[in-house]
Length: 413
Ligand SMILES: Cc1cc2nc3c(=O)[nH]c(=O)nc-3n(C[C@H](O)[C@H](O)[C@H](O)COP(=O)(O)OP(=O)(O)OC[C@H]3O[C@@H](n4cnc5c(N)ncnc54)[C@H](O)[C@@H]3O)c2cc1C
Image 1 (cartoon, rainbow, N blue to C red):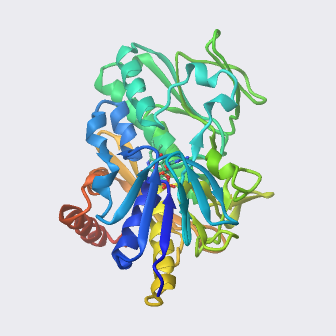
Image 2: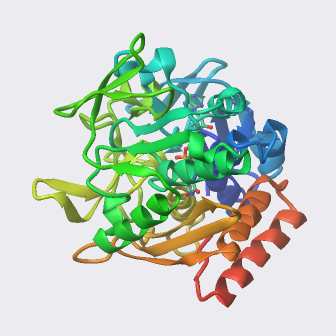
């Protein structure tokens, strides 16, 4: 067996899990190389808590090297290009050659794609954005707050709804709730359409119970900054005092220019194996486009949502397959489409949606009743994710698996 090099691009959720899973499975004669431009990793689900003052940035950030096992070679560099024909990756630090490549570069935010948006909108979709929004909220004394999902797809279909409910709770805690008019706009026909109408209705009710006005089928085309007005396709303009956007998403530049992507800028992969159409190149997580059973509209097939829980499970599957191919031992991995989501609702309450997104003829997803247990489950997930690779992390993982079993949920992470 010759010594092989697996290069992983992107040290976010999927990249870290893939690197650790490969390091566990491969002998040290094989290299596991992880390329990441931000060596301070931030846990995205906690951006919502940062926004409302329940976390400090330092509490939700870790040095990437603490999160991966010893023996994972972390290359702090920007990926500039992928040369699939010659099995090479250009980075800002060096050129890397690989035997296997895993592309886990996530999604890029493109606020400049909508005129006026970048000049005025806040966002809780980045660490810096959530920190700035927190300051803006502290200075806010009342008026119309518009949370706008700009376009599809976007990562974490639950996050805009959670963010809006946490904003309602935040204003309530500050005694300002009756001075704030909260609105949630989205181009979708209902919350989380991929999960079906029953779940969509339930989430809509959760949001509306917080006094939020939900506006489906609103596609933002422009922001008139001087008039503080939102322009939606075919709708009346809407005035706002504070704008919070989920900006348009697209595939990262290095991937768009690599020839790996479809016309929408995402990397198509086999939905079970995560293989791309290029030999020995896998892609996983937000950077991928995966069609799933069912239709959103008669002419639009459903795609797997972009979420950390999927990036995680896909990374385990791809790593297992690569390790089996390299060592000639062990079973290959397969991603089966299971996923879940803990939805923060404010007042330390949460909901829990879980199911199989590959189920035929459409995804089968159910929502558990609001409860504190789901909020605390999300806190536990955060603590586990940010724990250094090692014993403490293993213990927290065990707590998640055992807790999940106790609640009748097969925790697959
Ligand atoms: C506010 C918010 C809340 C969320 N809540 C949840 C939740 O509750 N549950 C859930 O499952 N998901 C949630 N998500 C989604 C989840 O964070 C993402 O789906 C997940 O991180 C995707 O993993 P990934 O590995 O594909 O991409 P990422 O985790 O984004 O990792 C991509 C990595 O690639 C790096 N990178 C990009 N380009 C380059 C380059 N050119 N060179 C080098 N490095 C590069 C980035 O710095 C990044 O570290 C949430 C997201 C947000 C924004």
